[in-house]
Image 1 (cartoon, rainbow, N blue to C red):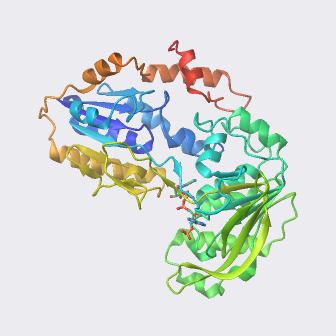
Image 2: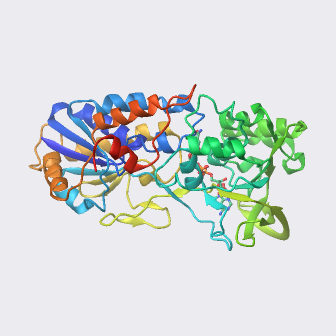
Length: 436
Ligand code: NAP
């Protein structure tokens, strides 16, 4: 028998568990461990609440969690309730699938002012992540600045722009839904430090901005290179995104809210008396190597809310070598060390779609299988050993049936048209389960 622990129950963790469960069948036991009482990580807390079709992938993960050789253990914080060193004693392989939940810092003066948030905090707020549910993003002013030109910037700009009617059918949590109802934000600037050809926005997501009820994108034609340069774009997705932007540039925005694309613009300082009031921006141009270079020309953007969407990092955990530059665990093709692996964003950094994690998880499962073939025995205590350790420390883990109870309660509490009303505090979830 082989025993495997996967730390993190987001997409990367679940795909790895799926691959291991298939490869080993009854000759392995797999524990998927999460710090929170509920599973799914990025699917529940990162994917936008109005992208319900993407969240449906959780049905596939449910099948994995319900397999005979797999368990889900929530409410167990690795590095806190149990160390990685202890897990390595108990299991033949430990797979770090902890994602990248921390915001990368801008490193700018004024970044700590109230009203300046990272996307993990803002997205976590509207998605009901227990770490972020109590934030109160200031929505009482009219101007928001969103920093970054990736899909998260699009998610954030879109959620700030939608009407409550457009949020129907989403699982945006009640506190965010109510706050957005009162929101006065009407002017959203997306600050992109490079140009339209350098965006990291995908066409499907970018096209959604063109279909909003009371908001429209504003793009300046002057920011584009000559049209002929579009033909040289090798990335077809990027070419489509650029074509969408050109389409936006050709239209007038006649709606109540504007989502302005400010290209070749990088924030240099954030200012305000006691809260954010403005962003000082420097005009940039592209270096021959494609990097943004400041021109020295500065201007001021009013801002009552600033959200930086510039990427994420994985939190370091004691006992796991860390790559500080990459903001992820130090690994080679997913191998951190003997019996210790990384998958997903904890392995690669915060890039790629949810689907990218499937081959990633399968590859690492393959490495594990090569190192310890199915049918072999490592003589480890596995889940029973972990249960005893948790017991001795009075840690009450949640199981998949517990999640089902939380899920049922969330579905029962949903507002009309919404799939669920998420519980946003860990203690509320544990109370429902009768755990202290
Ligand atoms: P991302 O795609 O890496 O985009 C980050 C953006 O921030 C880039 O435009 C980058 O510009 C900019 N940036 C980085 N550092 C900056 C700085 N110091 N100042 C100003 N701008 C800075 O990251 P993301 O948007 O967080 O998305 C993460 C991953 O999740 C991506 O793979 C994304 O596609 C995926 N995602 C997918 C969906 C979806 O499919 N619906 C939704 C959300 C996220 P440079 O290019 O100049 O570095």
